[in-house]
Length: 158
Image 1 (cartoon, rainbow, N blue to C red):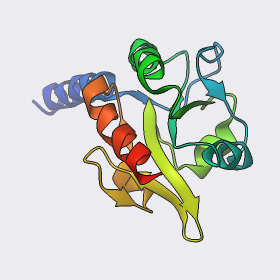
Image 2: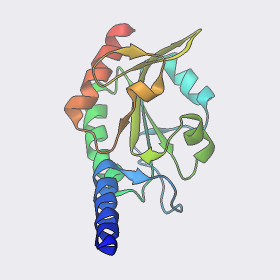
Image 3: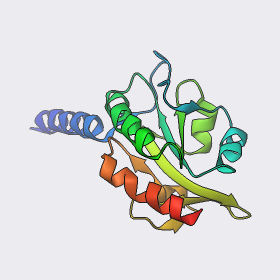
Image 4: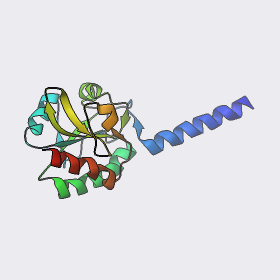
């Protein structure tokens, strides 16, 4: 009986992880999408923020949900690429930067409207401003419509 519950728990957790995203602890297998700006430091992000809001996608090519997210990001780049910078952080190759953003699951996306004396001003999926990245993170495969809300709000805030 206990063995059956253990098997069910493992199956449940496997399904949950596959639906939500990927645990960020696997080996490097591939490079980032060429349609995004790959950054290596927060200084790179800060420079881009001087020009416009940014959407940061943190992921890895080995992650199925990250690969499924790519066409959605490509579509958003086509719609908002002249108003927003789209940034990619490869969590395998830039693990220190991913760690600075407290990434545990991928894909992990956030929109930053600007940076001020308090730090990064994030915009949540509901269009609410916050300095707390945890409140603004969008983890797992995220639909275009959900990503558009913080993008549009970030544009208005500039």
